[in-house]
Length: 262
Ligand code: ADP
Ligand code: MG
Image 1 (cartoon, rainbow, N blue to C red):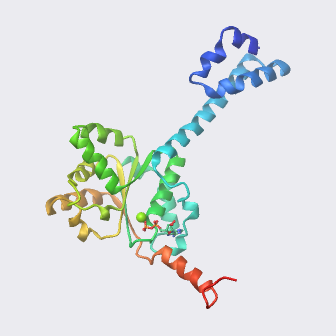
Image 2 (spheres, rainbow, N blue to C red):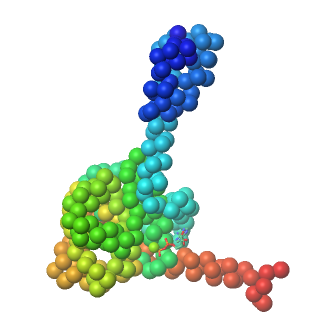
């Protein structure tokens, strides 16, 4: 039997506390229980390390979710698929259950007018992928462009691209709001080219490809970016009415004629 006294004698609980917080927290109670119930040393050690490994896994998921930039409440469970007839739940679930598309660097492109649920849907997919152990980063496309521009100015572009490589899926929200006159957008092309056929990118956009000329530096770069993005891609057309507006209209309809609730 390993008792708490033995662990204390060799100062093990303190040593273990550095990288094994669950063992540190549980060692006292489990050693007491072990002494009381006469566990074999193997059983005590198994219990301690099983607990450490399980909690370590939970901490890892929490870290990944916190670093993902995903809104906590935009999950697939709160996404109403009936509002978007062009996107089937089965198709989306297949993307969250099988991950070969991420291994192949397949992209995901969601098109639709403002309010059609693009960000919510991709955020929900992101959460489901994190639940499955994948790494996801969700960013406004314009914020990422700024981040990459800063990196280029500081001659850190390769390092920045390598940092983004740890994410299996990079969600670039609202590509249409990036304007080439806003700043140099060739960094966005560089990112797309760098991840091509290796790592997946998901994009939401209010505008069809025909208007992406406003985003990239020149027509050749626009074409080259679109070509790389669509070569291996799942495209979600979400041409529905704004969910926000529909919701507001429904609420309005429920109000009495004078517009004031009793
Ligand atoms: P978009 O990115 O297309 O502009 P959002 O995803 O931001 O649209 O959706 C606008 C709002 O409506 C958000 O609060 C979102 O949660 C909600 N919403 C949109 N579509 C749906 C849906 N199908 N089910 C549930 N909520 C939705
Ligand atoms: Mg959006």
